[in-house]
Length: 87
Image (tube, rainbow, N blue to C red; front, side, top):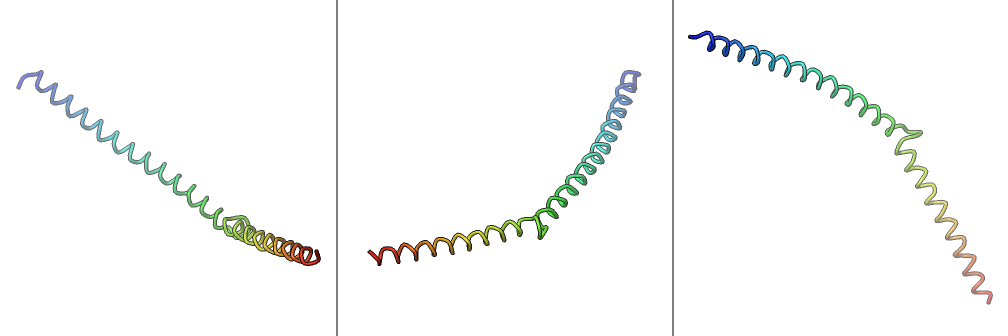
């Protein structure tokens, strides 16, 4: 083997080791970022599942508004029927 071949093999080995360390470091960084994202998603889910301010509270308010609107419309309908019958 010549010195050029030995240097080429040593360079190849150093590059391979460097890439290995880079992959490990990037993998750990990605795992850390994934953990942070998962915590944030869980926090958002907890906020949405809250009984007082979450989606169920919004649905409850919308349902109450539906009932209120329906009772108002039916009252107006009855008033109009009575007025039409009087004429």
